[in-house]
Length: 190
Image (cartoon, rainbow, N blue to C red; front, side, top):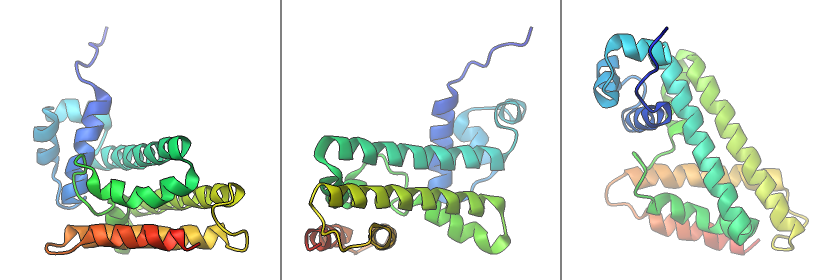
């Protein structure tokens, strides 16, 4: 009978996510992963199959966690207030391995190479845009945003603003918190 693995798969995916997020796909070697995860090569391949398979799991975990946090916030404070406070919460999080969005970083790193992970990152980014669209629509239903505004366009602009803010946050001597405040103020004007 095969021996049951003695590791927490979710914990390993979280730790791998942080390595990939901070170093990127090309900047992370199998040796880096084996050291971070404390797995021997055979155990690594038995658990995940390949670096790409683990990267995809890490991307999905990243997107799933971000979506869950935003949906929980919207349930707590309402869609509009969640959209307004989300940018600052992103920057305030000490749990981030990097400030720039992992999905965007992956897409930018791999799309010119026609790597399948770029397509997966793009799909997950589209999922976030859809969530933002839903939140803008809910904010309209709640009377927080005028009905003549297109939630799809608002969501695209919001995603663009967030991605720019997160890249700015990676730069030294930049005031990304001021951008987060500008995003919130812009929403208040809707």
